[in-house]
Length: 101
Image (cartoon, rainbow, N blue to C red; front, side, top):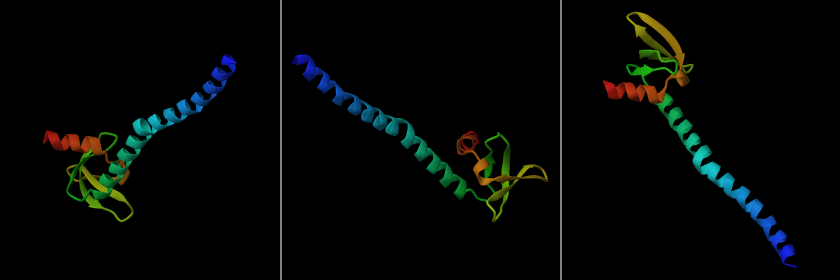
């Protein structure tokens, strides 16, 4: 009789453990990643002409013009311009470069 009670009680712990793992994954992995993506999007929408930036590939430059199609004309050297998507600007590298200056 005691083995029958132990077996039925053990079946309830597994779903609770699985639910607990999903909750922990949400708070430690999914939620921070979504928050970081939201901050990156807000940053890329707020950049304007005249700002010094660093792209995700490590190219440093100054924004010359913000185009209507979501691209940026960036001056990387004297009279040398490149066009980048807004998403190519790295928030972390740009803020690190600003702190150095």
